[in-house]
Amino acid sequence: MVVNVTHRVISPGMFIGTEDADVISFGSGQPDLAPPFDVSKVFLNFSKFKYGKICGEDELKNKLRGYVKREFGHDVSEECIAVTNGASEALDLALRMVSLRHDRKRVLLTKPCYYSYPHLARINHMMPVYTDAKINLEDVKEKSRNCDVMIVNSPANPTGDVIEKSVLRGIQEITEDNGCLLISDEVYHSLTYRGKHYSPKGDNVITINSFSKTYSLCGYRIGYVFCQDMEFIRDICDIKAHTSMNTNLLSQRVAMECLCAPKKHVVRNREIFQRRRDYIYRRVKESGFEVEKPEGAFYILPKTGDSMRMARDLFFDHKVIVYPGEWFGCPGHVRLSFALPIDKIGEGMERICEYVAKL
Ligand SMILES: Cc1ncc(COP(=O)(O)O)c(C=O)c1O
Image (cartoon, rainbow, N blue to C red; front, side, top):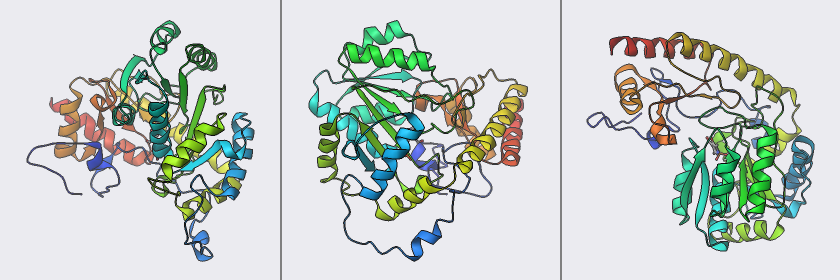
């Protein structure tokens, strides 16, 4: 890992995709568990090297159509689905299209929220407006009047919160009444430790999902977006035709196989993450930090005081990666990803305690 030790500078780009045996990483949100089948079996007989369809291969879209109906109760035609380079591209394309079509130029986000949302809003010439992540529907009603789109993310990064079904329904109705679109980012849908995942529905809803977290395929860059508005999907595919073009065909084949794999794999992974959640929550509390128990995803967000300094010191002096709350709009907290084995979580917590004891 190449780091700038002189200036003790840290950034997400420095940590994503890098590994070092000595470093305990509570940083990047990527599952350490394997995909549901031996991915190499796809390589052996895969020989599609030409361009593929911009909005996704028919076979995968057909499978996805059945999957989103079965899993989330969404009834969409294949023309209403686009396969993308992860949820990241889906979010960018959706916001580009919103920005092109609408003129309020504001995106309603929660605070804290996933760190890419404000950047994606600005890249697409829109201003982020914030409402508290502990949703107050009155505030959403007030603010969504002046916004083109709101983004909700449940289970949430970085809080691990799961938004109640009744609240998600309330948000959907309010945004629809206010002529505001609703992007529902559900990349952690399979990691809910309380109740069943609820996926908002309605004519104004754009759903975004990914194979990164549920099927441990972060590096394959495969996700999708769907909504009831066929033209919206067609228009974002027109943009995609001039930007990334088709999504990697090999990744689409692997994604197909994931959807055919027994569901017990996803259930087992959730159980593993739930055990890690219970363990890290106990360790963080025992270490004296104020913290809420995550209800989903694989993040925990203790209150720590000077979080930027803590993240720098832990990385440079103790070889532990944590993400400062500043990156997510919640200074004074650090985000720990528990997508790593329990023994590593234990060792990382020891190092954090050593650091805190010396302060
Ligand atoms: C809330 C949220 N949305 C989207 C993404 C991006 O996912 P993908 O790997 O599918 O691009 C992440 C990744 O951490 C995330 O936490």
